[in-house]
Length: 179
Image (cartoon, rainbow, N blue to C red; front, top):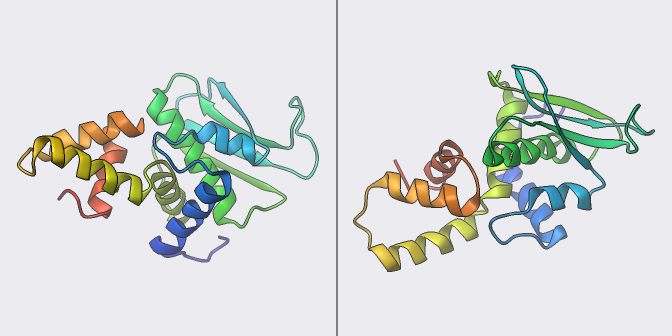
């Protein structure tokens, strides 16, 4: 990205291209399998109080790891949060055009510059593809009708897509399904 601000639709297209390339577009998306498909090793560690995850890509193997592509997530976070962090870190990689060298980390405090916002948008689109969301909502409404509190669809999407309720709410808001 290096200073270039991408539109939401450009980010979504890159996420969809990854899903197409890996043939992994059915929810819940197996984000670790996607990372491995592109040669990443995914590890969990105690990253301290202010880091959710990090990505490192180098042209030579990384010291102490038998890989040159590494994603690390905080071991104490929930499964949904870890999945979002892996997807977010992949966002840094794909939105920068799959560089030979890359380093980024996700702060828990979420210092939200454009690059972090874009990586979050990528993660959201990767873990909750629009066509999967639409299909799920159609089934949900078929079973429960259209008259239900928004929190029910948010909770249901979070459970079925294995993401946090916050992530589900942001994605559903972006797609126009909730206010």
